[in-house]
Structure formats: C-alpha cells, structure tokens
Amino acid sequence: MEWHFRLGYLTASLLLFRLVWGFVGGRWSRFSSLDLSPRAMIDHLNGRKTLESTAGHNPLGALSILAMLLFLFAQVGTGLFTEDIGGEVFGPLSGLVSKASVKLASGYHKEVGATLLLLLATLHLLAVMFYYARKKDNLIWPMFTGDKRLPAPVTPSRDDAWSRATASIILIVCAALVIFVVRLGG
Image 1 (cartoon, rainbow, N blue to C red):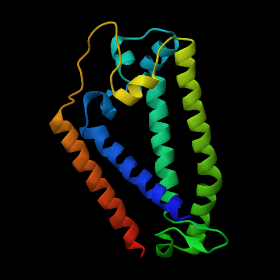
Image 2 (cartoon, rainbow, N blue to C red):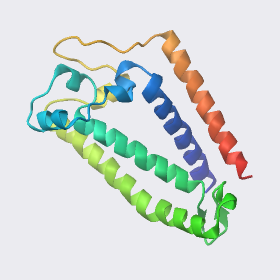
Image 3 (cartoon, one colour):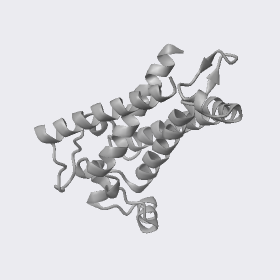
C-alpha cells in the first residue's frame, strides 16, 4: 500500500501539471487546441480532416484525453479519502470527512473508477493500434518525441530552454501542492 500511495501522489502531481500545462503550455498541449465541435467530429468520422486536426489531437483523441483526465482526477481524488484492507489503511484525507463519505469514495475508487480507467486505457490503446495498422498513422512515436511528420508545415509549439524550465518549475510546484494537501490530513 505504501507504493500505491506514492504512485497515487505521483499521478496527482502529473495530473495537476497537465491541467496547468493545458492552459499555459505549448500550442499543441493547450486545451484550446482540442477541437470538440460537432462539425469537427462529423468531419473526422467521415474522413474529412484538416492538417491542423492531424498535427494535434483529432476530435476523438481530444475526447479521449478529456475523459481520461476527468476519470484520473476522480480516481486520485477518491483515493485521498478511501479506506482499505478491512479498515486498517486509510487515505491521507479520510479523517476529514464522514465515514459514509469514506465508504462512498472507497467504493468508487476500488470498483467503478478502477474499472472505468482500465476500459478507457484499453480503448485508447486499441485506437492507437487501429490508427497504426489501418490508417498507417504512427501515433506512438509522436507521443514520446513530441514531433510528428506531416505532409505540410504547421505552426510549431515553442520548444526551447525557457519552455522546458517553465514546465519543470510548474511540475515542482504541483508536486509541492500535492504534498501540502496530503499533509492536511496528517
């Protein structure tokens, strides 16, 4: 359970970072670059895509990102208030809420949230494999490198020492915030 907590705190730090980076990060990392309009969805499903929609996340990829972020936040959030192993191990903030709330958070965290995240992760992996095998679009390499080959240039994201330093500072602040929140219950 000690490692479970540590990985939960790491996940919380990364989620907070991603939330902040979604507003201040590079062009393709910003939430504003996600096109969730009904027109973009219909165009994508009908095979009509723009260079912009292939450079960043396509509309279905954007929905996937938002769903995974939402459910990861719910999983991490409920984990802070759970009890486990027959009431012997408690989330760091479980003492701040009622037993009924702890029971509700625990039920979601162990049953609903865990299952939903496994389903979303599986769906995400299947979609990436589909794009690779059927559409000959390698989405894996760009996830690791941040670079994608396109048929024509698009406005790039800023990727320099300043943006990397900013990202590092934001990540450190997010981790410190998670530590602060966890210690509120202690």
